[in-house]
Amino acid sequence: MSGPQLITILGATGSIGLSTLDVIARHPDRYQVFALTGFSRTRELLALCLRHTPRFAVLPTQDAARKLQDDLAAAGLDTRVLVGERGLCEVASHPQVDTVMAAIVGAAGLRPTLAAVESGKKVLLANKEALVMSGALFMQAVRQSGAVLLPIDSEHNAIFQCLPVDYARGLESVGVRRILLTASGGPFRETPLAELHDVSPEQACAHPNWSMGRKISVDSASMMNKGLELIEACWLFDARPDQIEVVIHPQSVIHSMVDYVDGSVVAQLGNPDMRTPIAHALAWPDRIASGVAPLDLFSIARLDFQAPDEDRFPCLRLARLAAQAGNSAPAMLNAANEVAVAAFLDRRIRYPEIASMIDEVLSLEPVVEVKDLAAVFEVDAKARVLAEQWLSRNGR
Ligand code: NAD
Ligand code: MG
Image (cartoon, rainbow, N blue to C red):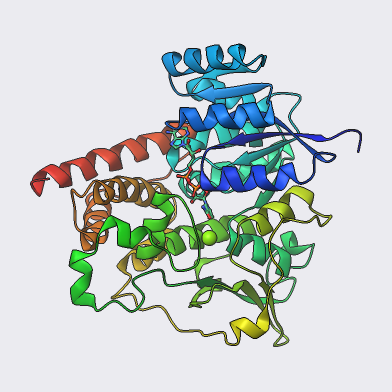
């Protein structure tokens, strides 16, 4: 390869974005930052631009973009600041870009991530919501453009590492019996059920093993994250929901496993630090240093496993049902969940109401076929309206 690869980081100011920049900064000979995007943390984006000198930056409003442009000019940088979703799509599909890290949280990442896919980039996918919402269209776009899609979600990155290179022939053809999707069980794995009514957003965001953004932290507490990951795994590995088993593994040392017909179970292990899957996907098929400490098996000493309890984690059941129903159901589930998590973080609803609200919203709409992106966004908007109606009906 000639010269460093040029990289766009969508969601650079977030947890995954910052971990990506940490890995990239260790390998200036291999990677160079092309564009960085942010949303509300404009001062953080300015600091990142000063450090990594990208050619482009993106912010959501004209005012914020103008201010950043002025600050960058005052510091002597010629970084161009673009605005909004158009700007995101432009830096995701720019002809000079080799690799796009898709690390915006939620449905907001769908169009820019698809723009990267459609222009045939190497796409490192952290934004699982984009794939959950539009799986069939997303994977069709990957096939049509020849984009290289590599999973960043630690479980999916682990599964990818545990599968043979020709897994696209079909899981059964390559001898896979099951995918074992591991989950930590989050901060409420052992909390008495009666106490869940009173848990706070801070408690939900205090994940025992991983440090992440607030939305995915709440999803991990409710195990909706594992439900979204189940749907994500179905699309990435062309699996049926019944080929995937969720296994609670509180230490988060095994990041997932593949169970083969001959009785072999292949696992990927490591410290719970997202720089490992990020470095893996950035360099694939090579290996590069990520800054993650070597795994100390003697201090870990033991690995535990248990089956998930769907009474404790009703979101997991809702997501499995949506995975089985397919079509519009996952987009509906995702949008209702985004509204519910935001309402919980704003203290408008109690933690157990996240699941009851999603359940009710899903029951109000029939599952329909989604033929194009417009239909996906229609479903997304409909679910958000129904979720807001739930909030007002319940006096929030
Ligand atoms: P985060 O909240 O820390 O960061 C989110 C990023 O998205 C920020 O850069 C923010 O500026 C940007 N953003 C938010 N709303 C936006 C909008 N409306 N338009 C444009 N940009 C917007 O989240 P995170 O933990 O880094 O997670 C990012 C994605 O990666 C999520 O989809 C999450 O599920 C996935 N993921 C994260 C982890 C992790 O360890 N953090 C692990 C696996 C997968
Ligand atoms: Mg994960």
